[in-house]
Image 1 (cartoon, one colour):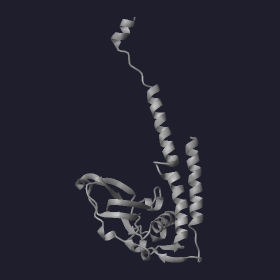
Image 2: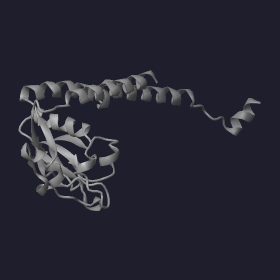
Image 3: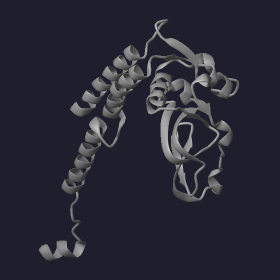
Image 4: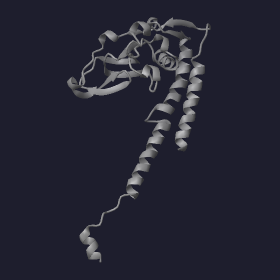
Length: 216
């Protein structure tokens, strides 16, 4: 409970610094997202679940990895952005997330390529902070079209400032979200420890009827 309370406090702290670090005015140049990255949506290929062959390569959808397949269509460092789904409004999970290495992406996530790590991560943090409702089409379900995605204005501070901001926010993000390190890892370890001892303490050997009679 103490660790969970600590995690909640760190999440609020992270959001506070993220909003503060990523709020800009006329002091920096602004460009639309389509001007600062390469969109690779045309290379995406959806595979229905019954046609996927299990493998080692992550298969990405609108909210992250949904499966693993035996082939890949991208190899490098990319920023994936949700194209559709209720999460574009609810924001339960990040709508922008980095993907690195050999991957497959279906048609529910936009694929963006940036020149540097700092630029990619800066835009990732920024898109996860801002309200995107005015860029969404809601005819049937929330949808962020490629045209609307490309039109999102993004602040462009100097690269060294982007690197500084990304360094700070990456550390906060790892602390509150990375299940392999930081508080989430500690909470998971304590939960497993609790479950281990619970099972150990509450496991009893059931006496057989015959053994009970012999005891009498």
